[in-house]
Image (cartoon, rainbow, N blue to C red; front, side, top):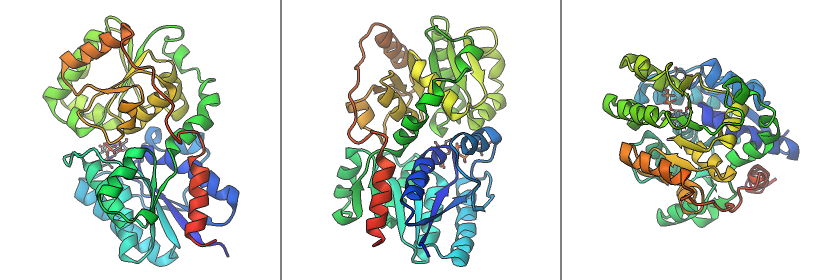
Length: 367
Ligand code: UD1
């Protein structure tokens, strides 16, 4: 009998990270992976489309937790995952990234003595107002095997005193998925559908509470983007959280529909990749998109004051521009004037991080 390991996912960015790890573990055929879906994200466009496109099988277990306040959501996941672990006793629990599902399942597992593997360990924004930063710190404090995606992760864990033997630099699994999916993304017809083929355009995504929950900040961001859209079309796949905020504040009429500022529903993975690869520039507050633009060498205006992925700024194509219109305008002009770094290749962002992970897992589990 092969040892059972749980691969835990809950929210959109987890699915892109789980898919290549699952494939790599299945190829080695030493472990029995079980997919546990917490149900943190449940909309068809935030969830099912990724399972379908990325070829992830139906989860073995669905915890169906849905939305809620941070405390309520985390507690619900913790309780339901604990019940599952008690029933199935996996040999290890693999958690990804920094969402509420990550920390909640790690906490349930650690209390039951189940070893935890954290994929994307060691990232730090040093901003404890971000829910993700709390999730990262706590998950790393509980993990037994910490798999790191970029050099800053090694330095952070070292500084925090994590035992060196628990930490492995394996590279970036998000880039594994990108490399795997790029040929399919190049067949996407999203550019034609949006009338963007052959045109210069900008892509915008935002969903961080710090950008979309405060009416004044959100209004300011939409205003400056609408202004820039007069020079270059801006396409904006809006996260449900952002869409709800826009509707609640009655902002949708003022900005969309009469210009080249186009808001659309969240897009599937391959369409999104096609939109990134062909964009003249990207505005985003997403962690994953900072990495994807760096890999594809597309200028990225990161709508944040800090990043837990500093390599994208130091060696990649991202610049932190916050949410002040002046800085955003200035950076936009810099891109158009060619005052932007071309970007370097990043160490171990090569499409094979998951192979290294599967190997580390086998060694760690003594197989
Ligand atoms: C979560 C992650 C964030 C990640 C993002 C990607 C945490 C703390 N945050 O943020 O790190 O970058 O996912 O999308 O885990 N909603 C729906 N349908 C869904 C899911 C959410 O309508 O399928 C709405 C609900 O109103 C919900 C809100 O979005 O309350 C926020 O969802 P939640 O999962 O709490 O956090 P995200 O903002 O999506």
